[in-house]
Length: 241
Length: 59
Image 1 (tube, one colour):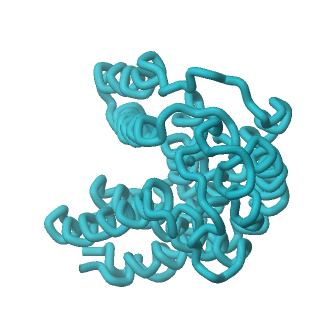
Image 2 (cartoon, one colour):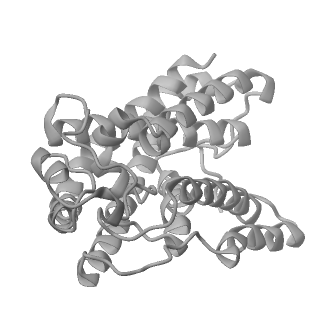
């Protein structure tokens, strides 16, 4: 077991998660909070910091959400604390997956090429799914959750395969197949809501989609570079034969 | 072009890196599943802003 390698990836992930949090708070979180005002106004939905609204308003059946609940059972660290915690964990998770991919492929993430690993991660996990399933705000109309999650997961896996075939394989058939893998889920199409009527103003929604993508791009660039730095400094001895 | 000293490939044979790769991948997938996709209400509510921000399907 390459313990130093694992630790280096986790450290890089935690670092990127910390850096991500203030970036998220510049624009994404205020937009989420803003959208939640429409959510409670529309009746039901899930409320996090306004426990009274969900139970007192109209029946949950009219909302696009499946779960109308009272104060959520989230961990007790407050909204910022919870988000920071989850960002740290998510950062480590994405770092571990990226580090694992590099190990499987026999490639080394360095300070120089780290940004490309980051861009690949952004493309696979954020950009490609967002192309057909834009980052959405609370209270926006959406199709069945499980269906969207399945589509998201399949798209991520196909895109990862596509990126591998295009970037790391020389053969022309591999590159063509890579393009097909990346395009296929979008031709098939993401699950869409039947009724697109939304309480959230479209300007807010488009602003959020762009700011979410920009934040994620920033996160992945930091993560890729941090991975290269951490692996080079702490784990390079393990990777020599 | 002069050869760069820091190589982009790992000389370690696949057999020696496979265990770490599998462990790392499983751990990462487990974490991302928990953060982004799990239907557990506690996880959903805790991860709420992160899920939206990452573009995970939410709600």
